Image (tube, rainbow, N blue to C red; front, side, top):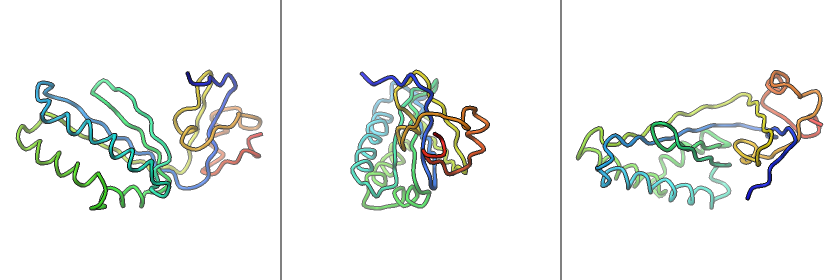
Length: 166
């Protein structure tokens, strides 16, 4: 079981930060032949990315939304995210090509979506939680003065260091 952090925690990170959300919506659950390959392709891609420390992927968070699975990815570079997506030798390209071939058989049976955010600043707070989200992708530090409010943490800008949070 994960260690619960009872203190107020925030993340510590300096540098480019890209938050990439990707999800899938199964519109026709009986068409397992169409949505299952897309569902199982993502873990392969994430294993490939996480095994390469230079990939740019810093961390991943899985959630189940009302419309289906959602994955939050934290990247240290927009260029690296795009490079992976277009790399013909990566697991992404064949998975994307297969998805496009499969969905032509029954348009609308399964949907894929993504949103990409390049963030200038990020404010986080974790209380009574295991280290999770952006803090797990970067590092977690205890909230201290003068950063004890969300507004103060947001004003701190794109760079944060543990010695300034103390």
